Length: 104
Image (cartoon, rainbow, N blue to C red; front, side, top):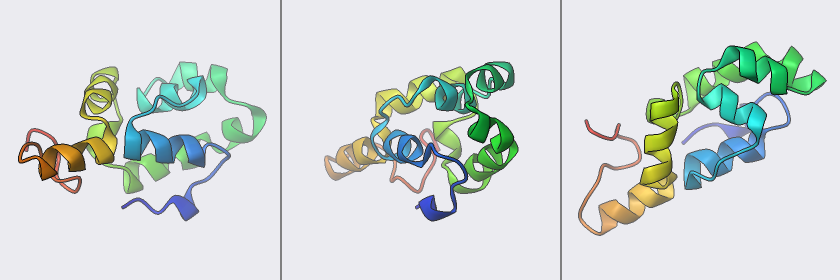
């Protein structure tokens, strides 16, 4: 489970709902998730702009690799329904555990 308490910036709620439920966050965080630096810079408020490298570092260290890093990964994570969706599928006998990578 990611350490949400260590999340830099003001978008921690967006990070949590994305990882756990695959609810699309705001435009800034979506750009981060899709690994779109220019869009993230354009969408960031002053606080998140200053913390952008720390925010990306948090995603790199704390978040499941399957939920961010490209538009394709974001699309696939949305289809899975986040960790709660993966857990539901697992309890029904299909899909990876949330500590596994989908497709592993």
